[in-house]
Length: 103
Image (cartoon, rainbow, N blue to C red):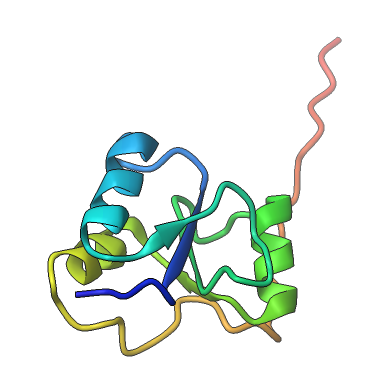
């Protein structure tokens, strides 16, 4: 089980409703915040390529980033992920947008 020192924050539209994921975290013994703060220890990313302000702040602060699937495993008593999905020093390139001009 998790403890009160584990503080989750969520970003993006996950495969489960956010209120369900927040309840899972609390029932597992962790805490939940609505934004990334100095207490946040894990950010659950719906999209690993996210460039949201939460994701950027979490990277800068060295917060662990995980997928919703890893979150589910952790809340069900499984091991923490052995590998972070995104290293804090490695920024993700945004996909380039193409401009289409119609005549």
